[in-house]
Length: 425
Image 1 (tube, helix red, strand yellow):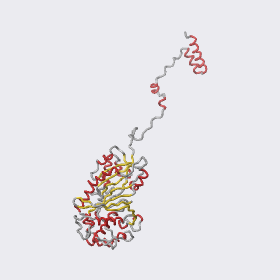
Image 2 (cartoon, one colour):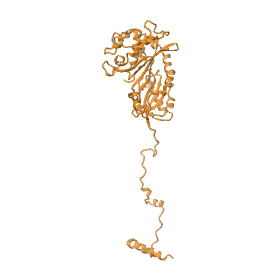
Image 3 (cartoon, helix red, strand yellow):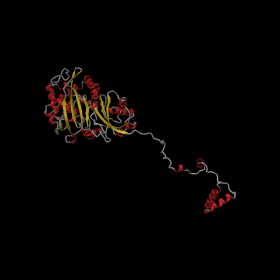
Image 4 (cartoon, one colour):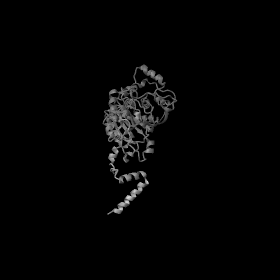
């Protein structure tokens, strides 16, 4: 059974062997019983042990990692550009801007950067070099100056609960009230179109010079408030404010600044003392500019200076302009109209208007800013002391002559010891 088939298979094998001399000789030996049949093929594992190549080894080897790095790196969180809405009381601080290498002068940014690192949203080395997180602030509020609406831009890791974590590492008089995503190249200083400050002062500052400079019973009349607002309105527009800062000469183009509005709100009473708030909005302000704008109007209303000195102060002649105390100056709001028009409605970014945070801003002012101004004024009487220096000013003389007269009188101007407004230069 199967004889013919077996014979046919042998004939076919014989035909293949005769075609190849080496196989033919081996076949003849096998038929004669001189060679054992070949052993069955070893399994792949045995072949590999004897050095034979298998298909899997022909694949490209996995990429090696350098040094001590592990093959599977943990996924890094992406950094994102954001802005933070901040409010703070500046009493006890040497301004907003951090001064590396001057640890004895504590600033608002010192506490903020420390909180960012401890919250885990920036690496520790970014706190040592703030340029690594592209940090920028809208305004460099100076010593003692507070803010209800400061805005800073920076790159962070957007971790969960970021605002709460930052605030948990900040003192109660510094709060981050809002956070928004912005474009990658956003710069809070350069993108800011305008800044609004307010200056809070006791209304007895507007009392006539013949009255007691510390008369707490004084109440601002409607007629005097009208006069104050008429004088403040003169600042609107573009003027040469070189006499309102020590940083600029009369012919420097950067001394020309644009003021959008300036006015005094109706007075209000706190703890038996009447206060008023002067608001000013401008593109930017120089060091001491707002305090001198307020100081000159106070001097005119009290009767120490003629109204003509206001117009003369914008000329090239050097005019002695008194500088009101730093207490009471607050950065209230920063404006981004141009940015909002371009990106606020693109569907990707929110407009920077902070409407939802208004209640928090108002609450912070009531809890931290107004009480600090009122209590400090009551205990230190900075406004009353400054008012007592106005008689030594000679508004018809140059600033140099007036300074010499003040030095000769022995009266120390308390305004020289307080903060200033400084958001650009």
